Image (cartoon, rainbow, N blue to C red; front, side, top):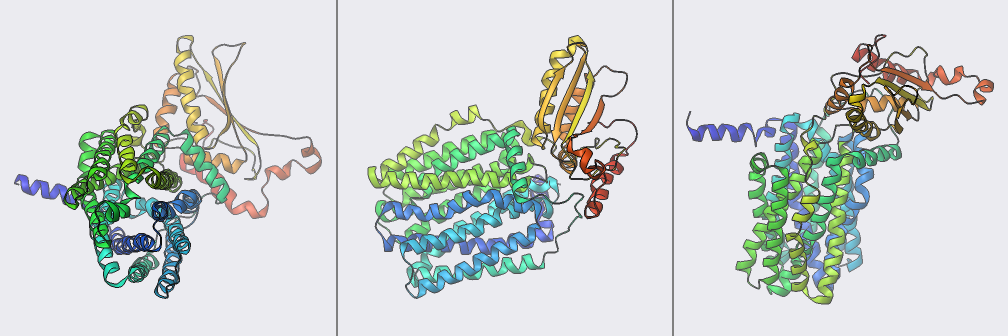
Length: 575
């Protein structure tokens, strides 16, 4: 086999492997068409604003109006994506967006759009994107095997940036020929293909072993996971900073086309097309670059390149010099955000991936919205060139942020289900809503292992709190120095079952290190304690133990399934 053949096989077996999944292929093609419509609409809205007003900050607000709803709504949308059927969520978002786009088109055709109503409809379309995004991105793991998720993320980025390459230029031509209302009509029609594909998708549905969480509880669980996950904390900091600073260029491109280059909507479209061309090239190379250089190096270098591109745009008054700067910025843009997306997906278990992607999107678009406002205002008062230089120079200094918050090695951890563990034997039938539940685990530790044990036990405590444990503590018996007790709480029995289901295979390694330092003849002893109150005597304590009929279905699935899966015996579990 020649080297060319081997490279071709590696390419189609690696970078393009997700296209072997029919669902992914259909959604990708439909999304490509929808992305074309969205980008054409973006050009129409931005250019229409330049004809309605002459204020720099109002033009920048078009980008802010697109990003702001994603910042505000991504978190509840992520919770909805994790607890509801993701296909239905995506379908609802597309239908609502199509209706809003149709109304916007009708008003534009009749000349009824004012600057503020234009921002309002742009905001409404952003709300549809905010609802759609977490469900779409978290469903990637259902469309392709887990091993192909990085390639699928890269292909989704490629699809968007293929549209970005041609879409803005096409949008500029449409606006120049037929006005912004024609661009809005194209966007309205672009939703139809995705609606048809989503309506035909028969997404596999597993019967839930536990009753669904409320949206509030799901959001709280997602916040807790992101706060206690080192990988997620790093992604949120890095992506928010990059989103804020990069918007210095992205939000002012219409002004650059009009004021710096003296062009019209076609010039604006060409600049966005150059940006998309660089993004396409970077998307094609992104998987290989991350494989050979690592996530942190790729994201850090991309931020510096984007800063150089921004500075180049600030100093250029020629289209021929501006196009290469936009190509470099587009490549850096997609490398940064595809890397952050991959790290988020690969460091999040399936139960919470919709929420972690939502937090990531909130950070990114919150930074973009705030940056669009800040740099649009800055351009209004100090000039467009000075505002762009400020943003570009700040991006050149983001290497300091990368040194403080390197992309964490946990991005490569195994977030699949654990191979062992579960719930130990429980003698009493218990209502899933009974609680609080106190779980205690007793260890015997040799004096020479005490320091190492305390350190790794606190790491185990972090994973337990991340999964929902409350009031976690590690205590040492003052009368028996070798005896340590780990203790934590769950609000109800069903919440403890959720904690157990949320554990990952990577957590097994932490538990193994804790258990390796246990010196007792028997495994660590686990106790499950149900809190008692004085009123229990009067109300009948059995009512808290024997579940009512309405809980019978969930009790059998929630309590029996973990016991059966892990082979419950009288031996305490690997807890």
